[in-house]
Image (tube, rainbow, N blue to C red; front, side, top):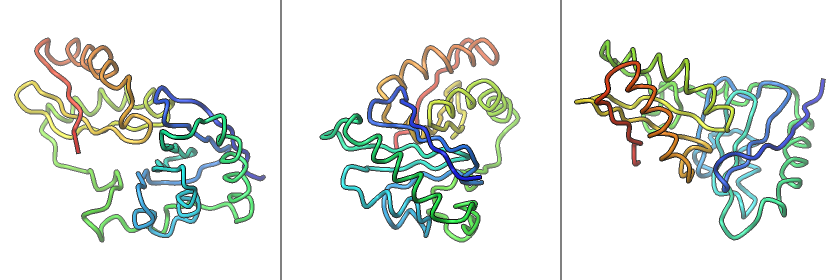
Length: 194
């Protein structure tokens, strides 16, 4: 069965999500340069387009962030066809299976985000994974817990969520409200500003 790709808009006007009918990756990676691509052919080829700013590859989708100077209606179809042609000209594969996440501590792979969390952080992480993560992934992004200290929850936003104009309202009205209800009414949620 060949790959088929459809494009889906996201809440971030700079990001479009290109969804495949098959899995593309077993690791999630944010790619901002050819160096970050680490031999992932689809990412390397997409970064050659002058209007592609960054890529977020996860599961069965690729979220592409474009430059401001071009509109999606001028490039979405071109990218959809390109991705489909590229994937179908190669055999079906896991595009991130060759990547060893333990070698490079500078890597941006989510697997390296494995930290030793306190019991309270584990509780917060479980809530994020159960209630928030599926919705964020549906929008072409990712959210992970960075830390919890003194009633402040810091999260990392990736893919379509990074730089999204509605991220602040999502953090405050969605995530913070949920954590106030389930953990403590004094909790504040912030995004990690990398």
